[in-house]
Image 1 (cartoon, rainbow, N blue to C red):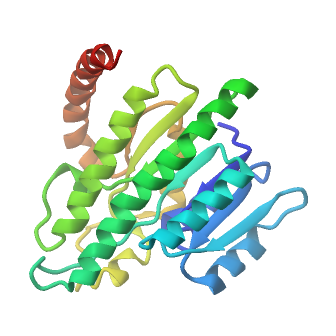
Image 2: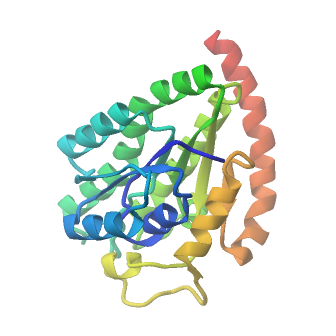
Length: 258
């Protein structure tokens, strides 16, 4: 897929940074994150002749941060939205600070909903006018396929991201907008340190660059991408059954919507 202008949230590290690096220089970039120094360094590294590149320092856990990102993305008329920003915290729900639990829900769920809802109409209309396709990538996780005690809120928020992407893809079946739920397995990023996990529980990990390239290659070709090769073996049969069921449910709900 060739996109004109991409918005990537949580772009300063991990998969978000790898996606920004993997997109061709023909794709202009709007990058967001909370760390201004890292954003500036990434922008400098990705600068190229003819490429437009802007950054917005924003905390997506806040109304003001989400509004700032939406306003700039609308002004730039993006056609590729990457909801990548995510927060996790290791620990029992009763032990985690309320502020941390609230922040996870705000970034992993509320920001995804608000950015998608605000930007989707314009993306769809512009794709129709130009005869092109827009794209929405929502970064979920392999933990979306089961409850994970001691990362309960994080895992639950990733279930939301997965189901939101699948439902949105069905709604947009006849529109020029592709939707992908990216479900990474263990990936070498700063996530584990930021989540205050005592150990990295994964026996092996993929690089963020590998995950990013797989994700970009999957846009327009599938709705759910699981990057963990071992988990994929156990998950895919369930995904196929859910895909069939989702199609049946979508037909019923579409009739009701009419």
